[in-house]
Amino acid sequence: MTSRVPTRTNRDDRYFTDTFQAMPLHGYTRMFEKMLDHPNIKVMLNTDYHEIMDFIPFKEMIFTGPVDEYFNFQFGKLPYRSLEFKHETLSKEKHLVAPVVNYPNEHAYTRITEFKALTGQEHSKTAIVYEYPQAEGDPYYPVPQPENAELYNKYKKLADETPNVHFVGRLATYKYYNMDQVVAQALTLYKRLTEKEEASKPTRPAISGSTALVDKLVSRAPKA
Image 1 (cartoon, one colour):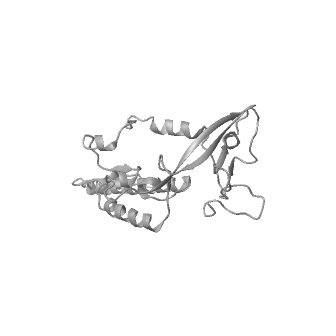
Image 2 (cartoon, helix red, strand yellow):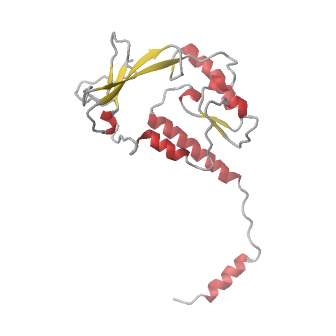
Image 3 (tube, rainbow, N blue to C red):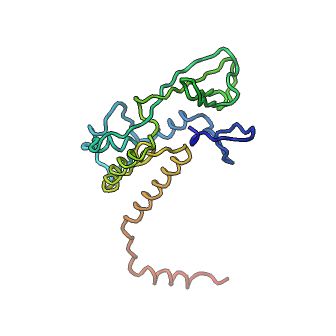
């Protein structure tokens, strides 16, 4: 816990001390809705990619799911820590002293978040969520142990040898990332893929006699 939660000797209650910190203007839901509202993007829910990958052609695939699942768990399953969320609405304007409070003690929950304190919303009630750690459930956090790193490296070797498939994000690289880090990883991959696309385009051939034509036009240009 102490490796993730900073210990301070002052009254700075921020989780991160980055100079620039921000939230999407209209929230993450609206941001992703706008990102997905494109004719080239089709969203398929409750669909296992194994069922469709042989029917949907692609030049490049960006895979953000569990890397062990992509390779059908052939070396075994990578362990993850999961979470259970319990939501509550309280009849009070404010509940916490800060937007997020961690509880590294005897409580069954490890964190409470009060969303209104993050978004700046004004209301007579407030909504909070408790986070309870779970051993089973949706994968959230990799478990940093030597044997797990060794198992992941086996999958990483397969991933590196898989052409035109790019593994990005927490689950695909079995590593904990903050939001800014995973966005930077995605943008870095995008830049690499666009540069690859540009490099693969054929060079446009020069038009025969074009140089002579340009020289002729320049010679006719009015003198300054």
